[in-house]
Length: 159
Length: 99
Figure 1: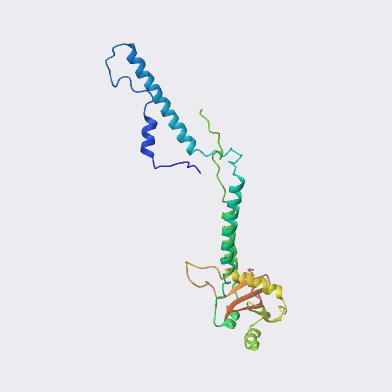
Figure 2: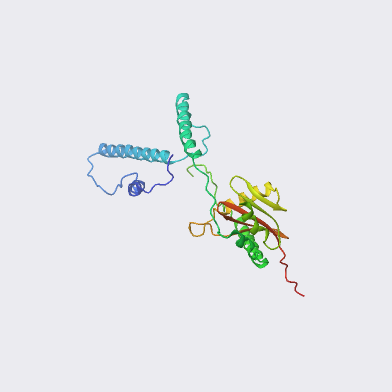
């Protein structure tokens, strides 16, 4: 999977992105002997520019996740079978350990069950309060929703 | 042994039935809950779920008794010695009438 954001190579990225594509003509004032010199420096700066563009393109291609690409890469038949076998054997091992787990024993809530059961019942006031609190909680939970501000899937295009 | 268990339940005020349930099944039943395996099953599930609640990471379930309250009656449930005790009691509490 590609990564949408990485702060690892922040500084190097920044330098490359703000680096001017054409070297500043006012910087290194080389005394020119003729038009040949000028043509040479222009040509070298062109290839630099190309190289820079290519690196930027490569890096973007590596980092972009294209969610609109429907058809998957596709695996070869033998690789698919190998993986299926791997997964089913792993599942077998896991299911063996799962079935051995004993059911949780009942905890003891009281040593005087008759006393506990004979005690006063929950008062109506308490029941009403709990019902009200539960209603508030339910209302609050039902209001949780996604606030979609932007499209989830966008076309990657140069404006 | 069952009489020791059920004697105390019989004497509970305004009870209209009871159940004593173990992991294997119903040990004793009487009154309106006599032979009521369905209610026993439902209550076992409810109490098992309730026993999974914990308050602030404490080790034991945070309650002594579970009450399933209906309009006119209540199922009071507790667990002791690997057995679930259920008693059906009348709910006689009425709203005070404000005149």
